[in-house]
Each structure stands twice: as C-alpha cells, then as structure tokens.
Image (cartoon, rainbow, N blue to C red; front, side, top):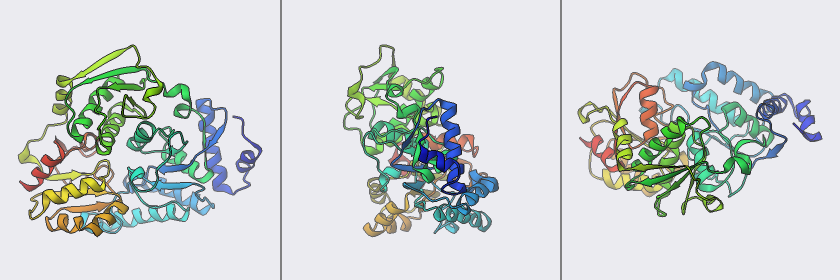
Length: 400
C-alpha cells in the first residue's frame, strides 16, 4: 500500500502501541484486498460488544488496546451489548455475566468510544452523509448505510472497525470504490409488501438467491413502493444481510444511487408465491408453543415504540416480552410516557441490547417476532422454534 509519511509514522509507533497495532491491522487488510491507499472515515460503528460473543480473549484484546493509549479519532458507537447495562436483572442476566459485560463497556469508554450500543446508529446521531466514507461493522447497519443513505462502507470485523476508530482511516477497497457498487442482478418484485415483516421476508427470498451466486452480485430491485418507510427498509436490510451477506442494494425510486445505473439485463422475479414461501420457512412453532416474544431486531424506532404503546394500553402480556431499542430512543420513550404504558402491560424495554446477542440459550423454547434476522439467529444460535408475524400480530401473541 502507498502509505503517507504520517501513516508510516503511526505504523512505527509515533502515536503509541495501540495506534501502531491498529495501523498494522488496517495495512494487512489493505494488502489482502489490494487497496492502494488509506482513506479517512467520518464515523465508525463497532461490533463484537456482547461478552457472550467476545469471551475473555476478546475482552483481553480490548483492554490491551485501551491500556496502550488507544483513543477514538472519529465519532464511534457500538453494536448491542449482551444486556441492558442499567436493567440487566429484569432480563434474567446473571451477576457474573453482568460483571464481564461491564468490563467490556468500560474498555470501550476508556478509548473515547460513545457507549451507545445499537444496531441502528443512524437513528441516534451516528448519521453519515451521502457519499461519505465510514467504517461500520453491524451487517444490517452496513446495508442500510450503503443502500438507503448512500454512504460507503465495507462490512468491517470488530478488530478492523476498532482500528479504523483509533486511526480515523480505512483501506480503500470494496464498496468504497465506484466500480464495486454497480448492480449485477435485477430483481423484479411482484408481490404485496404491506408491513415491515413483508420486507423482511423479501430480504430472505432475495438473500437466498444471492447466497447461491458465486460472486454475490449487488441487486437492483424494482417494484418497491416509493413510500417504503424507514422501518420497512431497516427490516429489508437486516434480512438481506443475514440471508444473503448483502451489504448494498439499489431500488428504483427508493435508494439514492439507483438512478446512476440502468437495471442489469439478467433478471429474476420474486412473485407472491416466492414471498409466501419465505414466510413459511420462518415459521415452525405453533402459537401454543410461544414462550418468548421480542420486537426490536434491528432496534425499534420511536415511531414503532409509540405504536406499540397504543397496542398495549390497558392490557397485560402473558409471556416474556422484550422490546429492544437504543438507550437514546428509550429516553425519548420515557419522556413521552410510552415506557410507562409498555411496562404497566408487563413488557420489558431493554436498552442497548437485543435477543440475538444476549445469553438466553436454554431459557426459552419458541420465539415470536417480526424480524427475519431474529428468526435466523434464534434457530441457529439458541435452537428456538420461531413464529414470524407482522408487528401487530406479534403483540397479539404476547397477549394470548
């Protein structure tokens, strides 16, 4: 790589051992992918925050980087942690796990990372501009940033995202380059898309097609409503990333870069039968089997929390019901009175965590959710059965 004299100095330790280690990570990554240079990034989002994922080895790495003088040089936020740092007892988290998770958060805090832990950083102040280079790690956030916002990021690993935070740099390769953002497959959507869950099912259907292609082309979607909401699109991004490893899509009339390109010649159709098949594939639990209900994967917006409060007002849930969101969003919900309504119904608002990264293996048998991504991890990680439903029907399951 063609490093500047200043970057070489960092590599030689001019800014301390943690900055040197960070530059080593980035230089190695750039060499692997054939990057010619480093480019500055405007923001970072780091994954690998839950102690359930990190373990002691990961925590030791973070502590060493903090002890070595590592300091974030750009706006940096975190992916969800394994628990709500302020309300972990209500989630059934053990004191031992809580102590470890607090050490993780403390290590990031020592490095100047903003310890808001969310998979939707664009909802809580980490919002890049169109065309801006960033270094984000969480798969759904990466897809949303590239596609819906038109910022530019690869899907970083936890260590490379941290390295970008400590240097303000990332290697210029992948989706930072124009040529890699061109669409390679047209997807004609000919199915009803009415709820965020419909968009999640669409992401699964398209994602599985991409997964079976040798080079995972960037899809160009036609047939999406121009009125698709933020909530619809974050659901689509989450499932596209989960089931197809997609970090970017274009959609005519919806995403900002779609007008730059003509739809590719190769075309596939997602009709109602294909969408219905995706729905069925996410359901293997009966209503009677549901003992855990969760909304907020990706984290809920304040609009979704307001709607949830309306659905729960004056009612009582009969099952364990987690509502997960970012802490700043939770604080708005507190001020608006939504939290009180939801908690009076017996549900739990869990801030800065989610059902995917919390240590809940063995605690439940079957999950009801509106998230295709949550269904995937519930089955693959926790061996839960799943019931995939629209938002309002998920709430109905919690009330049965």
